[in-house]
Amino acid sequence: MSVMPDSWIRKMALENGMIEPFTEKLQREGVISYGLSSYGYDARVSREFKIFTNVDSAIVDPKFFSPQSFVDRDTDVCVIPPNSFALARTVEYFRIPRDVLVICLGKSTYARCGIIVNVTPLEPEWEGHVTLEFSNTTPLPARIYANEGACQFIFLKGDSVCDVSYGDRAGKYQGQTGVTLPKL
Image 1 (cartoon, one colour):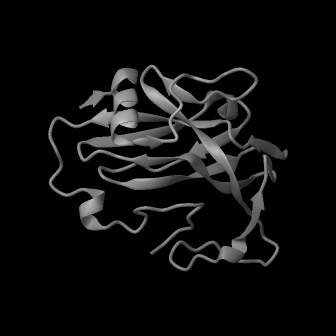
Image 2 (cartoon, rainbow, N blue to C red):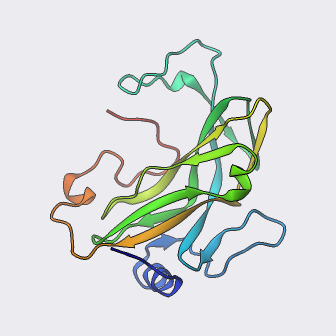
């Protein structure tokens, strides 16, 4: 398995639509960086946020998830309450090739502020907007900036093609758009 370089990511994005919209050069001026890097792609967070709240005393249950656990916000700056979290999505829409697995790591700028970004791996032939989880581990409110970098995707190319892809399994999060809540 190999980590794929910027030249491969660029080619797959421009010729095969692997990342749309695609930013060919790392953007850094006055923003949390996003775009193509040496061995990855720094994706942006959109303006759509679902902020965790306990106003309705909902129970967090992955088998019977209640949308009442969140309040929706469409904003340029999302404030996450202390020791809480928010769901968001990438600006970019991803289409993962059959022989690739994608791992996501949070940006150091957020990590150094106690904000953790979590994303599960993007499996072969998965496509959609990526739902992002921002955890505010601090006792203070934390800001997330829309249309700026949130996380970096690392593309790992397998030595051979998998027998069964996410697309073959018709995975429950296939083709998701918007911020997608848990499904059973």
